[in-house]
Amino acid sequence: MNWMIVVVGAVVGAPLRYLTDRAVQARHDSVFPWGTFAVNAGACLVLGVLTGAVLAGAASERLSLLLGPGLCGALSTYSTFSYETLRLYERGWRFLAAANVAASVLAGLGAVTLGSQVARQLFA
Image 1 (cartoon, rainbow, N blue to C red):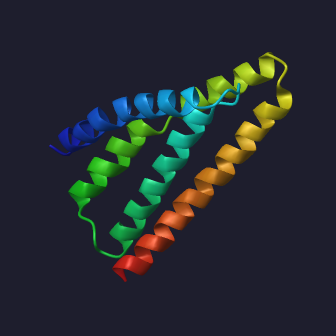
Image 2 (image 1 turned 90 degrees about the vertical axis):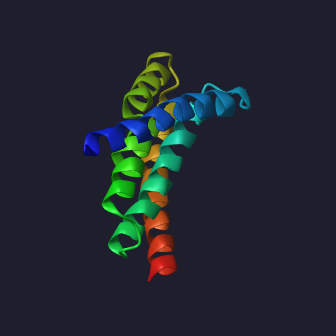
């Protein structure tokens, strides 16, 4: 029944991704995909906190399944990130395409590291 826990998380994560993406993008008059950037960085932060909590023994396997592959798996979107980067490149915005790749990777790694460290400190 672990798969049901993942499904429940995904049922929340997928619409949350879409709504957050649209809300963030609507606030920016830019071709840069700020909405996707925000949801991916946010998912990395949540996953980092979750990982830190699991490593500290403060989160159960069920919570890990619900929030990890469930919520974060549906919230983050590598395919949209890739598509939007390709579109920037094809439209001639090569600097923005490269910036999207670099910023997304750095923000994701930074967010997951920060979240993990914060959780380890909180639950140590």
